[in-house]
Length: 165
Image 1 (cartoon, helix red, strand yellow):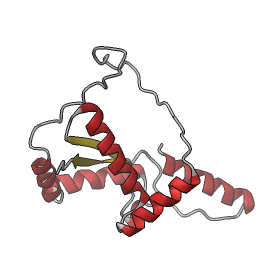
Image 2 (spheres, helix red, strand yellow):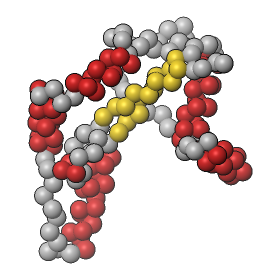
Image 3 (cartoon, rainbow, N blue to C red):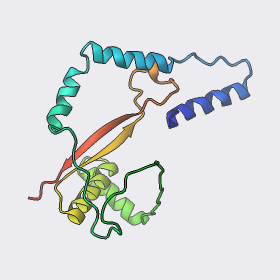
Image 4 (cartoon, one colour):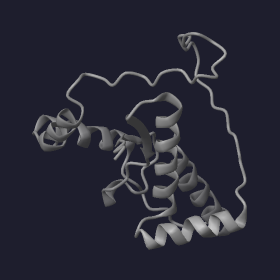
């Protein structure tokens, strides 16, 4: 179950607690979502998208970024389990305001600004000029699946070649 599924579930539970006679619409099931995905692949509906990604990434996979110079290990260990570490850093309100203003002037969002800063920082730390990151999408773009409960995530790859000119 993904985060969107939890939101759907909790909203439906809240509706029932407010009104025991509430009718919750029957969403499309996860199995129907997977059948739709399989059908799109079989019929070639995704061929142009696949061609785009094959052109964008002609090699089978990009190399992982090098270790940072300040890393305390000489090589990455093979993962045996996955976990997350959340680090929260608060930015001064004046700086946030300046970033928002700069983003508006560039006709972008603050997210674009932060992503660009991340790109430059990674490039300078590691002396690389091509970075790729993955951004998770809830993958509910079709109306039929907006209320579907399940792990529908899709990963959008964002390739950030740095123009050093």
